[in-house]
Image 1: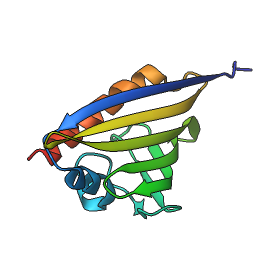
Image 2: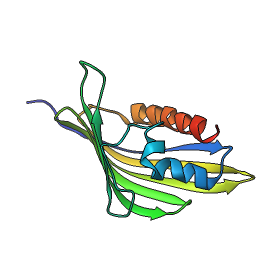
Image 3: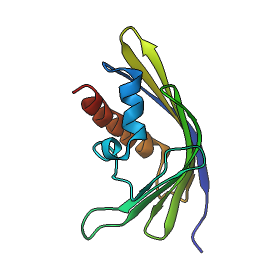
Image 4: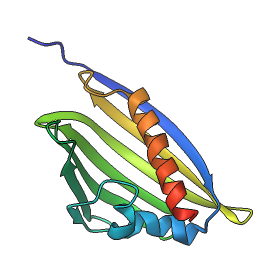
Length: 145
């Protein structure tokens, strides 16, 4: 039998964008805009209790499934969601994510906090944090256009 374990971790990634909080919030709230910097959702209901679901991956590679439920939304200020991430039929992690937006001298400071349970070595907090940084950099390029 394979050894089973859970690694719990919290990480925080911060970015400051030369864009309004409204523009940054819209990039999370509008499925067409979000699809330009994150995976294009197959299902998207941006409301408390709503679901965001996407599934896909590289040709001939594994299929990754992101399945989120929005827990709290405060327009232009905060988004909280819980999500699972699967690779094929394997559950990799379960997380709670909080995005906070703060006005910062004509810009917007985004604070992304993830609290996760990472299963059996299929993913690590370090890899997820790195990927989150790249994702937030892509968001920045989009909102600063």
